[in-house]
Length: 502
Image 1 (cartoon, helix red, strand yellow):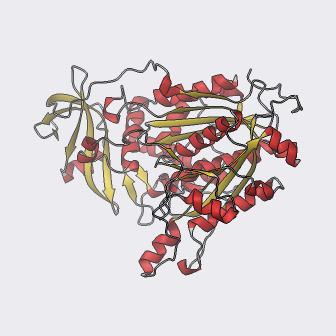
Image 2 (image 1 turned 90 degrees about the vertical axis):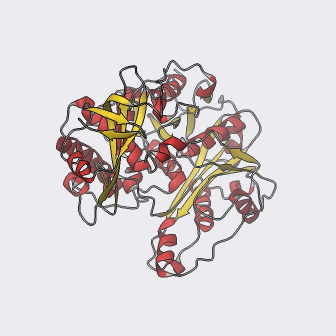
């Protein structure tokens, strides 16, 4: 076991370099007039101040030697430097993450390593988005006076990890996240032998449980519990985005939210007298960034890379998934949650979120995991004998990061695994963008625009094991795809990768 027994308190024998999260802060703004809104930088500062107040030590902000920010939809080339100037710590090292939902946990893990190895004493990890206000301003034809910063470069670039999307995927219609994740959902439905109706009802019930959790979260964007029928039934206010996903089954990035975390060494926490019941420890973490392109995955109904990275984090913490009392699986779309539950053998009756997920708690682009970690800190403070697991996903299920957290310091210190350096026992499937002939439809996506179907893409498997993406613009086929099961059907892929049915 890589932790103290559950009934043992933290002691002064803890390594002084042990990294510890001491403060968390969340904020949201909901104003009708976008001219009354604050810009993302202001929300970041507000979240940092709340994080400092959370541990009762505002002076921690003035001691920051590192400031990390996940990249967002704002005009700051190095927001860490803007924050450092406001805090009076201009010499602080700055970091900026590339676009990926897995980057927050990756940055927190990097901050923990820096502290454990003596390179840092206090690190701030902070992010915010104001997409709701930005869109309202655009619709109203008004300009928002946000700080512009285009000529500053961060000291550390958390990325790039390689291209998120293969150009052939874009060419064949795999452009939008909802559409790509629907590929997995449709494949899982077929593997379970479910009807289209039963499948949508099941994932809507799953999401209804998420909405109920969000209703208890003071920082959730949507705090109204919704019945499964309200979530899964298409309507003008809940239009289809990608079969079977309605808008309410998707992440909601049209939010104004910010969150911040403060990490320091155990020595610093002791020196400042930060109460022990405010401290949360990162027991173990793992990152996996270099995986296979979507077309080369063995199948599109499982997530072996997710499983590998998650199991590594649990193994380093010395626990199994059954010993994790509190859980937040990355929830951009139902497929992501189901794949995580399948990968870890989580019971389907469990609602694997502490926030309400990206659809209801809010999906502020790159920084949702700041909110899930902040929420986990408060959950564990109330339940200090238990552990929590945070998962995150980037790209088309291409990048994964996990963290195991607890209120008791880990007996062997913080442990970390860079899974990119490990030999992964995960086979690849040959992908051939020019393959033609007889094939079987493995899964498919049906994309919508303003509630109307506009394109279909099929994963086609050939007898020799190759995969190719095939497309169709047949409107009659679009209608049939919403009523009938197309996974498992025989098909013909003709030149140009156009799909034809017998």
